Image (tube, rainbow, N blue to C red):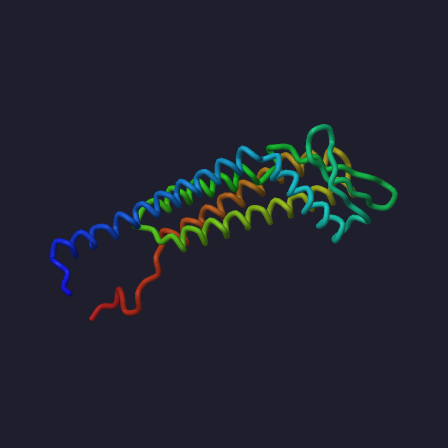
Length: 193
């Protein structure tokens, strides 16, 4: 049995279309997930307060629990005889940062020039890094709240927390682009004879 040349050509052209279609579906799926994360930021905040309550309880808090302060998910914790509440608003959440990283990854995933494994790895590292950094921010703000005065907390929250997350986002984007765009040099590449 032989395959005619016209048939083998059509199969050869079908593979890139399948790859493009797969990339398109994956990019649209990742883009939809990014939008879903941003639209469901309240659920992300609930998860973040759950995690933050455990971390505060394990580190400096005598006890900690996830609760609500009005409509906002919050972390209630005790140090000594005092109780404190960290209210996590939409601006404090990592949801918008993570959603933006996932949207960028969706765009890169669509183009054949970038390896899908590298794009997804870079997105995962960036999102996990930002989530961890936001938890460190919650820990620091909780500790500052429980050990200093209101003015110090306001400075730490508005200025320190904002700078921390901006630098964290810059580092996450640097990591993302470094992993996705910059390729490793092949052995022997760039050597002069």
